Length: 461
Ligand SMILES: Cc1cc2nc3c(=O)[nH]c(=O)nc-3n(C[C@H](O)[C@H](O)[C@H](O)COP(=O)(O)OP(=O)(O)OC[C@H]3O[C@@H](n4cnc5c(N)ncnc54)[C@H](O)[C@@H]3O)c2cc1C
View 1 (tube, rainbow, N blue to C red):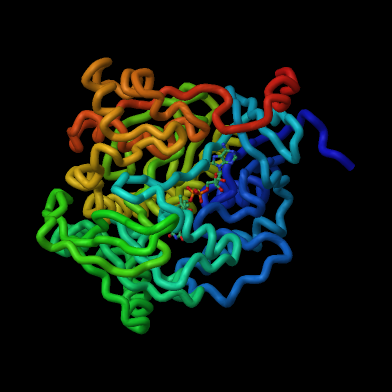
View 2 (cartoon, rainbow, N blue to C red; view 1 turned 60 degrees about the horizontal axis):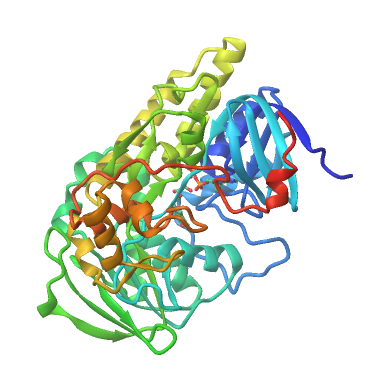
């Protein structure tokens, strides 16, 4: 039976990652009608990604201890009464209304409460050769290996900054890829600043040891204060020039050396995916240590828009444990609004503690401004519109240094990704000021690329 064009639910959730699933499980167990929509082909979000039905992986991907929470969440999610619409792209939204494309058809979800659990996307920092085939973001490499069972190469370089590098290395190792080098741009001393903040969080310490053990066993040494200067190759990446950076992330050319690789995963952190929240009018804040612009929520995960809740990376990068804790808290807070049931104190405390530990860790990996010096005048900074650094700089000099002026002046950020890839770095690159606060990007409908017919045939509110 085909799905109706208009669906109704007590609670609509965008995002079936750990935050969305944790919230949905609590709400459905309490008897509310919950509908979760997600672009992915199966629930799990970025971290608990599942292979498509019927696809065999090349072998077991090693999983850190925290992933057992993922299995529990997924099992409960599958057992419960949550209506899940996978492969659904949300392209428009207003309070209590979510328009999405599913199976080529235009759909509307009407709900009394809306929870945004839209996660994050990779932060890209352009460097010469970053657009060569074989050079991917660290997140994209994980998606290939863990989400589609694809082995992307034989000799990998993993480079960037932040905790996502370690799962990328271990995913590649379990897929049988040789990790030739793993480079973290932050210095070891900067990273040590995170230690006091996570000392009380045994799960994170256990996790760190687990990753350390995997790297040690495979003979991979994480080099601190190193990064990639450029990638080279004939039609695809064949070599990478790597070297040390100073404490601000500025390259030290005298340390450069060349290594042979056929795949590169570059992950310079994550950026919260707040576009749906922006469209709804939710208040946001620029918070570099949490990845950039993020949604503001109160101590019950309520956004500034009545009836709206948000949880997980959309409220600032923090990892899966934060997402689960905040999703659970948001569900309890929502139940309190609907039924007056008390919000468990333990749920509030857990969300606070997980967020505090994540903040402490991420401060040590906040984006290094000097890394923007890697790009050269002819380095592409906007892949969709093929805009080079020199053009973006000329646009900033001529039209003004706001994100909007740069965009209008050179078309950077106007392509299909709508600035998701280039936006977070564009202003710093164009103005040469890596420390400046990035403007809040303007969002427009459709939020994501959908068929014209989807927009034309959108069910009326
Ligand atoms: C590419 C990538 C790979 C990652 N891999 C790992 C990893 O291996 N290990 C790790 O510790 N951390 C990983 N992370 C970090 C990870 O995001 C978090 O730790 C955790 O998954 C956050 O949970 P969340 O529920 O907040 O968001 P997510 O898990 O990101 O879930 C958000 C969901 O919202 C959906 N969504 C967003 N916008 C729309 C829309 N417009 N329409 C429909 N659906 C939408 C997405 O499809 C996604 O499934 C990864 C991040 C990224 C971006």
